[in-house]
Image (tube, rainbow, N blue to C red):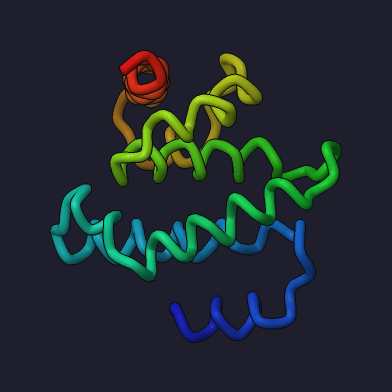
Length: 125
């Protein structure tokens, strides 16, 4: 799965937002292997996150997957201990709860709200 995504990303233009699939692949891998949030601290995951953040910055505002990309960036930033960096993504999302929250959480609204609060509190620390 990772090799296929890596091959696709190698030729993807900046702003394509294909980089979200790399983070999704990691989440599926961690879920399958029973690894928790600490797995998000690994260097390859952080590199994938940085690629996504750069893609978001390069994407046009009307990109159809921009909300989902911002949501993934926010979730992974919070889960990897970088909650303060997630706040701009939460602000851009407003109250819009989309994937990954809607796909990976029993109560997506509550999970989204808790992560958003964590991001807000981290900026005040």
